[in-house]
Amino acid sequence: MGEMMQAYRLVAWEQPPELVDVPVPVPGPGEVLVKVAGNGLCHSDLTMGQIPREIGEALGWSMPFTLGHEVAGWVAAVGAGVGGVTEGDAVALRSPASCGSCWYCTRGLDSACAGGLVGRGYGRDGGLAGYVLVDKPGDVLPLGAVDPTTAGVLTDAGATSYHAVRRALARLDPGTTAVVIGAGGLGTFAIQFLKALSPAAVVAVDTDAARLDVATARGADHVLSGVNDGTVGQLMELTGGGASAVLDFVGIDATITAGLASLRPAGVFSLVGAGMGTLRQPWYGALPRDGEIFTFQGSSRSDVEDVLALAASGHLVIDTERYSLGDVRQAYEAMETGGLRGRIVVVPD
Image (cartoon, rainbow, N blue to C red):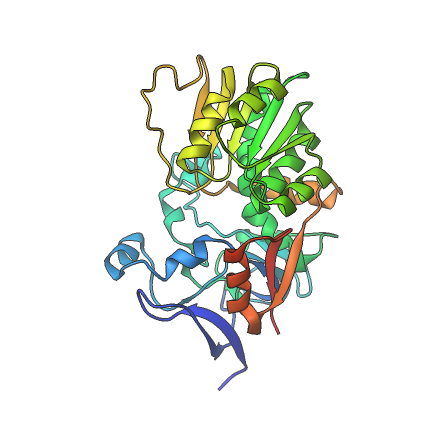
């Protein structure tokens, strides 16, 4: 038997993940083996073990697989026929799959490709392990001077936030305001992108005082505690009659309603948070005149590349809290409890 490693895996449908020993993969032709430096945790990991077999198989998932889709590390071995990377290179891994040839992929909209239903850490082996095997060398992205221990969070949390900000930039002229609802891992990245790429003032809204402290440190011009009956009035006053952009990283009824009500005409509302909220109002009067509303999941390859470039140029602070792979269960518990000041990164033992 070859070298073994620990991996945090879903081993059966509708069962919790387990920390198990598995063989270290060996790269074949066209494959790259990456030694994991750090893997960021995501709330979506917690729901994967609850998916019934019929739904998982319809998505194209196969069991078992290792969790973890925010991965970075170093190239450990390169299979025959692979160029552009060498052993020891610091790299990040793009998680979503895409076919590269459909209508969406050929127009740079690969985040909408039907092939993205299966990805690294959801349906195939991810980075909550000592090593991860990459079957598409194009998913291996150079990091340069960016620390691979924390860079994995840029590939999903960072890139997803960037995707939302990029869509809103055209509405953000001097004198405008952008509102970020939910100042957690994604929201904090959004604040940094807004300050680096636009002239807009930024208002951060969150129920967690620790998160609001981080939001201020990362550039938010104003912070508000929670979403309540007075939030819309406060936002209208702070924005001088309405925000030009609202980015909702929570996505419950209260945040959707307050966010839309805080927009000025021709504003843009981005629903990113998967809180399963609804807008229980007639659309007339609840939506901004001449406005734009969009929602999405994940990010494109160009989003990830742009975010890595911003990090390499020193425009991003990556706030993280580290746990060892042996303490991965406690790491997920901490993520659920709240009060964190950054994304959790799990480091192999």
